[in-house]
Image (cartoon, rainbow, N blue to C red):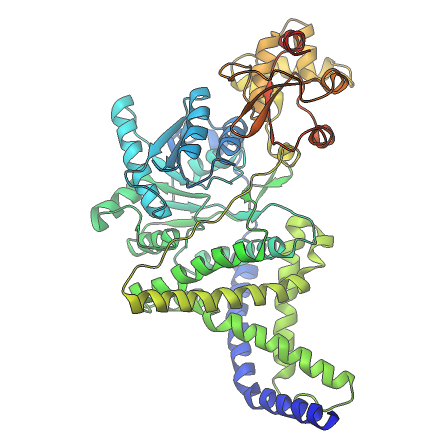
Length: 584
């Protein structure tokens, strides 16, 4: 048995040694390639700088259409719309939400928010779903044109978002400013933080932190075409109309990555493109934030679609392009070989380390071993720096572990993408579009992304800025701003609660709630102590009225009394007391 083991080890060592020159050659080529972009970033890419208030106010306010394509998004779309409607500092926009006729749950969720806020418009796709994201957005564009004719408006900019997106309060203002100069603008996209032990989601944190810090900024600086990230992308209306004139369709319904295609199409038309560097405002980056897949299978499904669209379909459609395009196509497609070889390199390094630790001969000496090791350590270090800047250094300490897990994930995705694409071409059929399931942040996670109450009340026309400033200076430290304003006659209680509801992105009042519960779900002491009244069961959730939105600890306590999801409605203290009398 020992002889067989030694023979197997020698065979593996021989195989590793025979393939070593090719592997090292690839790693050096890829490392030099990455070094080009890193050098361009360090030498030529300025840090993100927020536009001043004077700059923002110096350009006309454009009417913005926000496209949100949906398929089976009833679990998240209402929360997404309510939060972003309340958070945005910009007023001149509408959400156009694409829904399918065979997805009534999502359509109902969108219509419920549309009934509360006229800035939400449902766009029903003509065909049953799922088709593709591009097909849904083409239907949204048609609905937007109908809306324009009916209301005598013209939207000057389109912004694409997904149903799970957390939009920064300053996003639309900044896009409005930069759209004076650029036809396409891409904001950074960053994963929301999750615990360190969620390795799969952590891979997305690392990937997007590095890609949207270095890659896209350097790419644009070097004159490369800007691939849209699919969300947080703004287009000037004139640019999209030019695509329509030249290509007939705004988004290509046959493409799995229509965002990538549109970036290329606009660049070929000579449209000016901009990537906005990561810039901090109100202690958070001005970026689109979201939860990416948190399980391995879901992540592999999404990355398979990305690989198929960006590497396989684009290769089939565009070849290797012309001139400087060739380099960017190379970068976008090198993962087809690079991801599996990175996994092989990790395995070879681990095997060599094991041989060295057990006193056996490892890899043969090679002059480029130290070079590739230096490239690898340099890349890992830059990845950790980018990650630490966004998520902190404790989270960044796990970058090496997540890098290895990412090699495994991406290798599986490449293998599946190649197999799916080859199978589809052999059968003469289109590659199927696959949806990614989405989550939306819980109440507590949204706290840093909300506007201040005083700002909201000023925006609603209930107060002047000077009144808020004077109240902030005069109120005792233990008294809330809203209560101080009401007690001093500057605000009515209903106006206060309208502002609180908008800030927290929850409905106000109990209008439209169906049949009431015949018995309270929570004990009397919980209802009175936590100021929560369960009213009805609607679409599998318990509707809970409250005069003070509960924090995360109270929400966990309420879940001890029911396994059903909770949906909150904000009511005034007087209405809360009336509800208590009815229920108790």
